Length: 190
Image 1 (tube, rainbow, N blue to C red):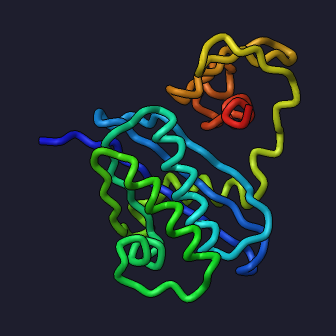
Image 2 (tube, rainbow, N blue to C red; image 1 turned 180 degrees about the vertical axis):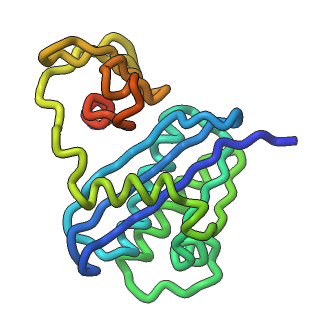
Image 3 (cartoon, rainbow, N blue to C red; image 1 turned 30 degrees about the vertical axis):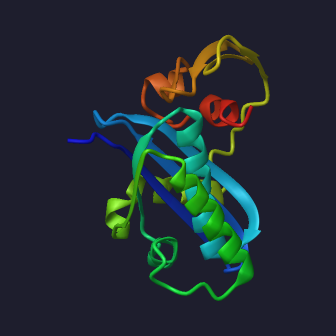
């Protein structure tokens, strides 16, 4: 039996086109969340946001040297276009689709499946969080890189941030109040 990482993606847009955001989640074969990403991407349509989320997820999975992945999303249009089942009517979406297909081809094993929104809650939450510009308390300190995935966030207090394992030593994260915390969100963009 082949054990796959699970990847979830979601995009959202207010106004379509309008302010847009993405959310991505990567889960290891044991069921642990190893990476979450929430990002405002500016003005875009919902479909552009969905493709951007998928691409960001695949790029990060490849950066982590993941070889086998099962990607899931609630955008029927994106999934059907990636699989070649639906026609692409807009050149810019064709470019995004081709980029995502090229990334999928870079894995030893890659599957992509449509799931209902209720099975994509984590990615949906992350895209909406970025769309609503939360968390508003952004980290404004400096980072010290300790290793490829470990940083020290220097602000009022120093905290260790592990972007590979989606962890931080700050009280908000440790007590489970804010996941991902402002340090993790900022470190993922360093």
